[in-house]
Length: 133
Image (cartoon, rainbow, N blue to C red; front, top):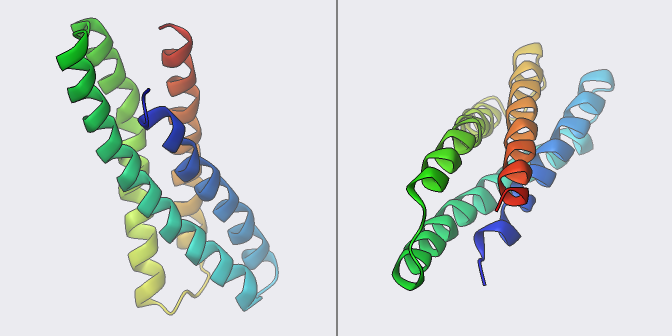
């Protein structure tokens, strides 16, 4: 049983939901929305790290048991690049929030939109990859 595919949905859902709270915080300066977005970004980072680690565990165990087609590994790497970039964007987003006392700004909202687009693309490509197996 592969663990990576079961875990990678969490950062996608958490980060996309954080964008919703960021948009609400941008429209209404309510600390509750900012706090929700902050915690969703942080939890997304934790689950992304878990998903990355479990991806390596799955790959190594799968290689030992049955071998992995090098074409699949290359395709997965290509599809994972937006996910790694999204994780970096959300890490910067989280640090930015910590340093500015989680104040909402246009730059923070733009970073959230960029991260959400990247993670949505990653989820779409991951689904295509899974369907092609």
